[in-house]
Length: 91
Image (cartoon, rainbow, N blue to C red; front, side, top):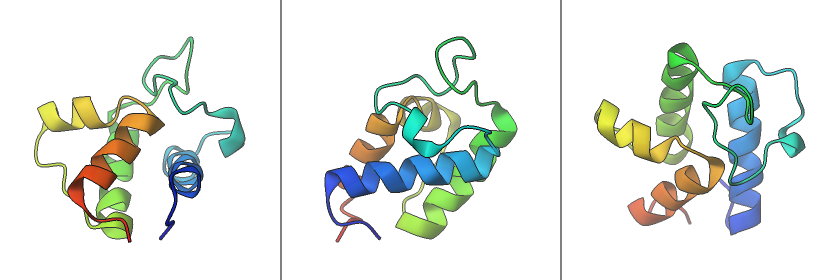
């Protein structure tokens, strides 16, 4: 598990690319990019969300308990990283 902010965000980008089966390298996803916007982001969908949530739970031990929380947390790499740090699950 990554220990610093940059490493955490890079790991999250790799996780997003893998879970959503994106055809872009993780480095092309900006930290503040909206993940669900197909014009300005990767354009994730509900199936991608399920994969990402399951993998976040496995990798970081965090729980996204409901849709409302998921909508707030999964906006961008920054919001996911903030959620993980706030949960106290980073080393």
